[in-house]
Image 1: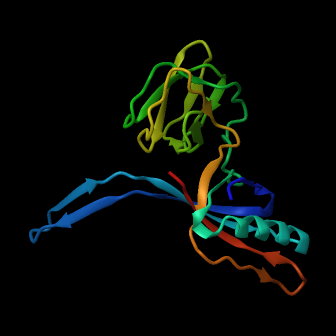
Image 2: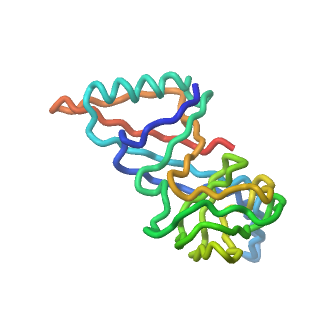
Length: 196
């Protein structure tokens, strides 16, 4: 169990944000909403056409996870790194932050990070999304607005990862199977959920 699954098997990904909201409606059509926290990411990955050797390697890795019991990391294809072409360096959080904040101040790095980019802090496994563009100046302190709220406290030595961001995930089903197409190519769809 565990390990890292290569993105080379996959050509497409669907990423879903799942939040927990309770809604009650009165007879007069007023609604009361309450967020109960617990946001997580779900990924549905679709493979490219795989050879028998590639399918065998992929399937062996997945079976080794023992269904949802195991966990592993994967960097989503096409969305695992910033879309910015000029981001450099590793920003470092400037002060300690408690869980629950919606933005973090960091210093270092250069270039820009873009709204919708995934980031991860070096001290825990949760993956966050930037909700606005950030210009990394290197010499000034920059604000990184994130979603969801910070799950685990960070310290002033925590770094921010924005390229090859690994999602710690587990399989959502106990059963795993694959299909063989007519020209002897294999295909696979994989559903995973973020492990928190």
